[in-house]
Amino acid sequence: MDVSAGQNKQKEQDFLVASISQLSISNSTSPRVIAKFHYDYGVAELRFDPESDPNGSVHFDLHASRLFKLSPFQSVCISEASEMDKEKSYSRGISIQFRNEEESRNFHCAFEQWKKEVVVQGSNLPNGTVSLSKSKFDDKIEASSAKMYFHYYGQLLHQQNMMQDYVRTGSYYAAVMENRVDFVGRVVVDVGAGSGILSLFAAQAGARHVYAVEASEMAEYARKLIAGNPSLGQRITVIKGKVEDVELPEKADILISEPMGTLLVNERMLESYIIARDRFLVPNGKMFPTIGRIHMAPFSDEYLYMEIANKALFWQQQNYYGVNMAPLQSTAFQGYFSQPVVDAFDPRLLVAPAISHVIDFTSTKEEDLYEIDIPLKFVSSVGTRVHGLACWFDVLFNGSTVQRWLTTAPGAPTTHWYQLRCVLAQPIYVMPGQEIVGRLHMVSHKAQSYTLHLTLSAKMWGPGAELGGILQTSSGKLDLKEPYYRMSQPQAYPLTQDQQPNQLLQTQDMQLQPQDEEVSDLMQQALQDSGAELHSF
Image (cartoon, rainbow, N blue to C red):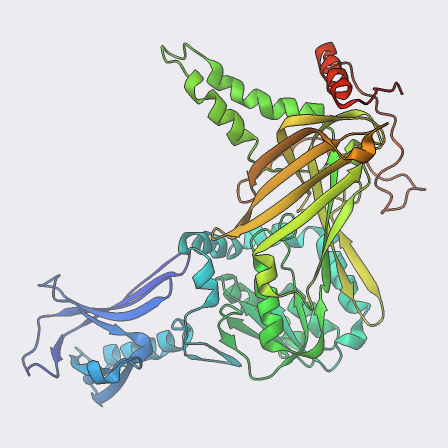
């Protein structure tokens, strides 16, 4: 027997059998055959490959097949007709001859194991099943993205990276333990359970039973971890599958999950969290987390802007080994500015108080997350160049005893999410008290992320500002799927002892830098054209 297992949901198991014969065709037998159990990204089958005829393979869908033993050395495998159209398809079967009784026994054991553990669609699981209908997840997410996503989260090193984010893990632990009253004697569903750590927290808090739903190969590690904690594990069932597909034997009193990505919505797991709510949660059940908020504020960071712009200088070369690279310079310049920047920054870079967009997980519809449109309106506290929009998020665990926030704000302890900044290729110039308006339009795509359309405009200020004219506008298109990870740069400054976490923006003393006298002249001319005056500050 040859057994091979590949990473990322690819598995095979081979057996050498003496012969097979088609029941519906003739009683003649074939030469020796390799019987191969194979599972490849959603398709599980039993394939018989004759050694002498590579093109004579016989395929059976494991989900629709059954195996019967006729004698110690002979069995028959029957494939049922399609449930979709039985009138136009027929059952078929083959007779399998084994060389000895031990090989027959091993083959039957392997068949039953594959039916139970590998063929998740429609097979019985310990406390749940997977729906036969096509997954809603598969309809809206492209296969290549899902493959990489589940491969990534199926590795222990990435789970460790998240678990060692002690702000994240500690906040979840505190939220659960401080609200034991919400868990004691209750049924909990852990959506996207990963290593199973949140399921173990729920069990520690007294949950009657926890269903840990995990679609990646991490489900097997979760089973091992939970089995290693038997006092808790006896109340936890790991179910391998997507929340869009699995069926549970009972409703949940509370959902717990860590569905947040960069900018809260990246990876589109919030949609799965909402689907789990609609499918499994009892009316008025609890959700941990309960709401999420995306915070946004304009920022000024000359160093970051120059760092990004300078990357495209490579393409200005006109004699790179005899090649003129300049035709691609403009494209490269725009490409670098299409990457959101992920890092931790000093909150003193913000030039206006932040605004927030709230997503209530208890009431938001899944479709509401397909496209998110956020109007922007700020009042600048300083005179400076605005280089783009800074974003971060927080989530609330609205427990019955304690309401606890998990924040990724600048100036707060850094998390593995860091913060995110959308840098515009063309900065805009503002003065103290000047209004900044715009729009952040987020459109989901099938690569489990969003395209960001950002527009910022500086409105008129001073005399005549009530006319509402626009002095300058800048816009950009960014792909949240392809960020620039800048975490190696200097991290955020710590808060002072007398500074509250929500006071991220203090009165700033940043002045408009005389970077270019021509710029000031242009602004003065623009103001004169509008009938307003430029005041000195």
